Length: 388
Image (cartoon, rainbow, N blue to C red; front, side, top):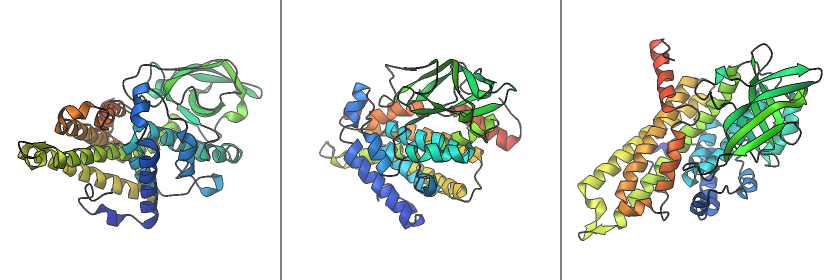
């Protein structure tokens, strides 16, 4: 972290490997993302040429063991990488996070040894791009009521149903989808998109948010694939939630990165913008905005740091991840709004990243669990009563 955002000397809590991964990612974002991302965002383009570059910095499988092509880094390192990638743009963090948190983790955690050996190394190098299918058109916050299912027929399975709001839908080489078997149990299946019958995808166009990330639908109509593609150790919806938990952890750190970027932009602008003969940063109202921003950032940093420690020691609960995801996205939303106001009219231009981050945060507030669902997860945890 730069001095402007490390108000509590949190830097001292990171080891050398964690700092190295963060700094390398930050430099990479500065070189490859920031110079062109505004143009891609305006044109609703995904910078796919960055996929190989992401693989080179270990952004695919950072937390996956080296024997499967990953880096074998810890969760704080992973969080710091997500923080820096999202400072560039949500679309870049999403490419990395889908590949690592949802696809590679699902195979590593629930796949057979053969499945791990077959897919993980190629996912780590970016030779294969993955997608993760859980949400359906009618079931977002309640995925356990999904309609998608599969039936077995000798050595094959036949899949019916659809998955909606799927990142990398049309470009994925493989997709991890979660569907019910004939007994109603939710299982994970590795779909090779070029080796399955009666399978189609669509892309949702004209989005106002996540414009540099392709989102779409996966449709299965008596789609046949081998029974060997079922994730061997998957058995319930809780397995899909375990993958989502890693994804939510990535969002908690990534949204912190947005908050830091917006604050630093506003702070620098406040020192350079002259009004009435003096920098606007010398005004009490501007200082109040900046003070609130750095205070909330510091609290969010401490939340992420402790959460990372809990993840590393395998003591973290999904409720703790839920709190961090909800809090940090809301914090980033408020900071982005205050930063935009600090810049005045310049804040809505593409000369600065704030408006783009504000728009992306509108997706993050409902992404991988709405703000309200996460509130109720915490409410259920502290009271013992389920309100949903």
